[in-house]
Image (cartoon, rainbow, N blue to C red; front, side, top):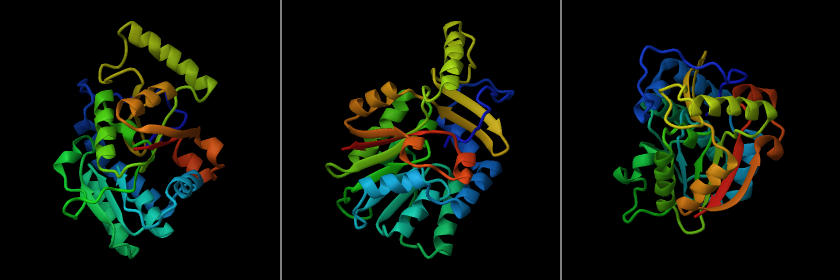
Length: 272
């Protein structure tokens, strides 16, 4: 969900200097500015060309039960429904976004989607499937950098483990991340940021190197920006088998509306 464009060096100035937590991120997503931003995207933007390409490649079985983590206002969820998937469970930890997703699904005749209020780092507390025993999912998605908006690497790994536990053997995982190395400008910026961390001059709200916290017209955004090696290590540590990764521009040429909505990202596919 990395939505700040050409403003990478502008951090939020807030009175509190407490370290960012999951509660911080949840409050930011429940803020009216963020709710309007993501709800408009769900209504008018739909699936990106790159998302559609990889869904068709890695999730060809329309009958497979799918789990979508971090569904937000339902942009990807409703896109999956429109593609013919009918066994969809989608969850988010931001109540206001989830409420928008439920309303949009009802408006579009997609009442068969199951929406749940849940946190990817604590999925053991939620019954994801109505079956007893629960039916394992045939695929899981965590799109638009949602995984990267979990503060703390161990928390992100906990989310990956939980998603794996909910899936059937060989089920695919599709997700996106930013990439600190995707351009010379980005690499130069992160060299400067590394110097700040080495000197102890980084924003004290940040949890670890790679974190950013921004504010723009659509609200506040926490994002962890990894490099490729970090994600490969996290997949291996949590039992996922890496299968594919590529920058979005290598997957599809997106229209201006998508490029205006989000920066470059890296798509990932892994197997349970």
